[in-house]
Image 1 (tube, rainbow, N blue to C red):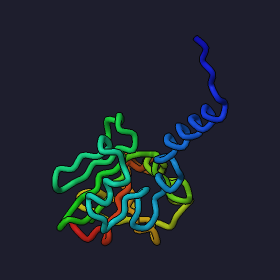
Image 2: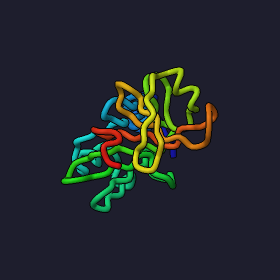
Image 3: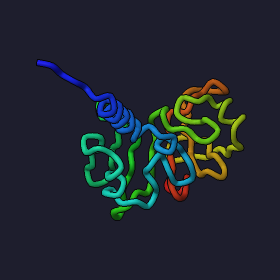
Length: 162
């Protein structure tokens, strides 16, 4: 028995596999901006957010939607809090998500201060650095310039609930 592989079918197959692997790896999928963490946006419904991710990547309990960009991850990348059927808060826990100035979970307070003007405020029981213009609150773990960002919170009125 003889097996003949056509190089064009093999090439197209490999290109298809590579493109499929890149679906959730495009820069916009990990970009943090005003009101947006990757493809999840404030104001979306849970179903709208879930459409962007494979079914095994999300878990919805009625009030929060956990999103894992890579389904096998144990910790969610984003937790979208839902009120009245809409996303009102995005809590980003993954270092994969970054702002245009490369700030995200794991960045230090010093790096944050160099990249953006920040305003310090109380967010519930957490003191956070609010990135002005992006309306992102950075929760910090640790003290001083070596403190690191442990979560980035996007919501319409940061500090509005207390």
